[in-house]
Image (cartoon, rainbow, N blue to C red; front, side, top):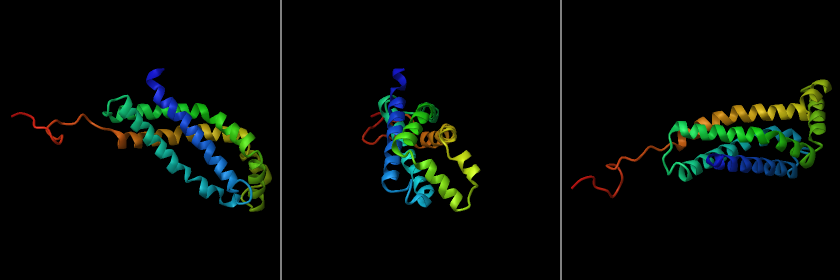
Length: 172
């Protein structure tokens, strides 16, 4: 378990940041007064999520792999991070839905019906805790693995060639 300590730490950090993001959205009125803008602004969390994955893999490379990490090692670490996020996501969604913004489902349902995007039955079937927990599980898994693959590509580092390391001379 200690070999996955870094991934667990970053899964918790990711979840806390997600909760703080939702608190921010709530305070800015994106869950009620400005609900029409919610979909646009919530998509910016993707930038934050990518940043967290990059920091997590940097941490793993630096503090576990001694500065050297293959794509495969990075992807494995990112996949374990994703698993941690997936495991925590139902709890995060419950906290968001029942504590931070309990009126969100009613508000988004009303908005969707008023704008003609959905019928009331469609909106009620879509905007509920069960569906959002399922969506958060699937979304975290799919986007997490894609992000892990890209972050691992960015964070990979090979063993440096002593001939290429500045300030060293191979043989004299």
